[in-house]
Image (cartoon, rainbow, N blue to C red; front, side, top):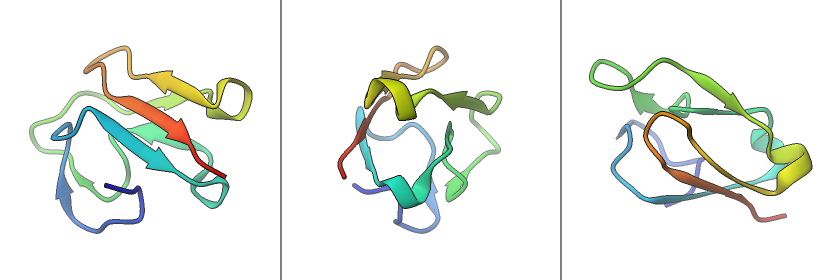
Length: 64
């Protein structure tokens, strides 16, 4: 599943692929439903290229 998908449930995948155009990246992503999720946290993908959310453990990968 990519970050450009629309209106999907938060934290349903273990791995999310994002592109430079999606930066800055937060978990949950803006296209995710927030009603049952955790507080938004921004992830340092610009430096790391891979990062895990400290709340839910979802793994984000920069794929550009």
